Length: 266
Image (cartoon, rainbow, N blue to C red; front, side, top):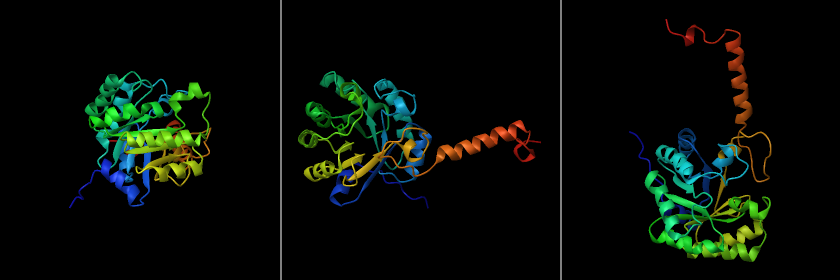
C-alpha cells in the first residue's frame, strides 16, 4: 500500500518551534531538484531569488523578475508533495505600494502550487506584511543581511546592530509573519532574537541557536567551484563526481567505446 503523503502546513512549521524540533530548508529552482529535496523529506523548500546568481549567472539577486520567479516556482510547486514551498518576492515586487504588492504576491500563489512568499523585511515592511497576511497570504520575513539592498550596503557583510535587528524581527512577528529568516547575524544576537519571538527563526550564517537552517542546495551539494562563504558546508562533492562522469563520457565517445551493443538496438 502506498504511504499517504502529508503536506506540511504553516501551523506545522510554527508548532515545530514550540515542540523544539529543528526545521530544515533548502533552495530549489526546477522540477528535478525540487523532487529530490522532497524525497529527502525537507520541511520547507525555498524558490529563492538567488536563482539570479545560481541559475542565471548574475552578480546579484537584483535582476531577477517576478515573471521569472513565477516560472521557476511553478515547476518547483508541481514537483513537491510534502514540503512547504516558499517563494521569494524579487526586488521591487513589494516596494511599489500595497496594491501592487498584493497583486504580485497573489500572482505567486495563484499561478504556482506554492504556499507562502518571503520578503526582505526592514522595519518599514511591517505594514506590507500585515497587508499580505490580512488577505490570507502567508509571509516569511527576512532579517539581517538583505541581498536586495547590497548596492546601499556596498558589500555583503555581517549585520551587528542588535537593537535594530531585534526590533525588525519583532515588528515582522507582530505584523503576522509565520517565520523569519536570519541572515549573517552573530550567534548571540540570533539566539536573542529566537528567544524574543514566538515564530520560528531560520538561520543562514547565524549559528545553531536558530529554530532551523536554510542554505542554497548547490552549495550543500558542492556544485560550485570557487568562493565558499564561511557558513556553507559541502555535504557532498557533486561537482567533482559529475566532472569525472562527464569526462568518462567524452573519453568513451571519442574512443568509440560508447555506445556498445548493450546500449544499441538491433
